[in-house]
Length: 588
Image (cartoon, rainbow, N blue to C red; front, side):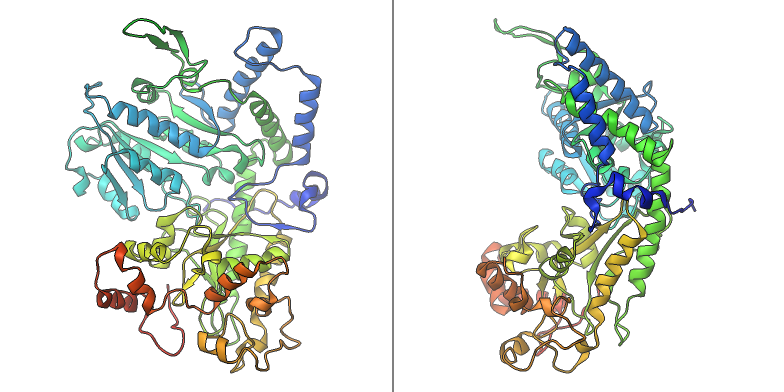
């Protein structure tokens, strides 16, 4: 198992390098990590000291910009352990833009009726269930010629040529998957691209691989990905703000041997990508530039951001050592295991776990950086086994304490569905009755018949400290006050719908062991922050009383799918348990 080691240097550099973190516990590094003060200072001094022009011009300021862009491109490849002899790097806005660039190239090639190097028109798309929405979206350009692998075993079967998806002959194809789940932090096998390339099965010929490394690159050395060009992905997407905090920039790293497929069919060209263009005559002409990145980087590059990237790499190596990503990987693995162990040990006095953590020990192990990143996806559970609303209560209360996490569906519909136990028709029904990604706390659909529709995510980064872990654990421990286990608790998310309506005027004042700032007290809409609107209070009240999906809602959603009400009731009973006078306790 790879080494784990806490980097206590981060505690010494906090005040000087990360002053914006004073008094805050930032635990959303999977969204964006934090930039160092010295990075901003270095970049600002560079801009003041030098005159940079548009790299497409030929004057001295333009040449200075162009040279620094070229130097930074090579420097970035080497930072990731990607030999510039075998790889090229295309600057884009973010990881999504990198994925979209690959998609557009494949789509353009697939729409031609001509045979291109043996490729028949159209392309097949394969993707893993744990993909981010930005990867899933590629399927909509394939004319329904796509397949989602439900698990790793299905991928292995396909790679072995034993899947029904292997029945088609030679055809242009693309296989995409995340290096790390942006939901659970599980790290998927990096061996798949090499296995695909080495396969002699006819259905794998001319099928390329796309690795979404946005989450992985945050705290993992990508030299493990690019060490051997023969086993590396054909295309790798990533975002630099997830690694350095700044700049807001992304990249597509391409195996040079695979790059031709991006150039062949691409129809659009922008400024700087062509050697010649004509505009008159019946057959207008254009000639793309030969160099891969020059032919795909449309228009003027964000050269100021690229200059900032140059400073970001230098800063990272100065703060975290000559091999910064290995140092960060060991540090975050240490903290990730600590967090997981501490969260797993939190139990109510009656033995019920405080946190439902979504992980599969058979697939990943906290502390093993090859199988698990420093990310924990979970839901808070009350003493009676019911789930606590993940945004309106957990994230809101954490936010008040300056503990910053993320909650919701995380743009990972497959991960949410598989971990929370939803089938496709369940999710369609949720949408039919108002559920929206990122807005469940507004639409009243965080908890549906006792079942959560999203999670809370904690993700660690290079500058996370043990004190940050302790802050989160102390916050979660507030949910274990003795007053929660009385027969009639205060008006809160622990009350059933009937209790909420009949006992709201009874003696429900929190006791000394249940302060107004605790998870319990804030579950009542009367304890919402003063800035909360009346409309939001109404929506939240709906969520807390679990009335968003009653039997009538089933009938209301009937036009979406032509099903009989009775069939829907049976489905919901199977999904949530038969209706009773109290909420059901579920196990996900």
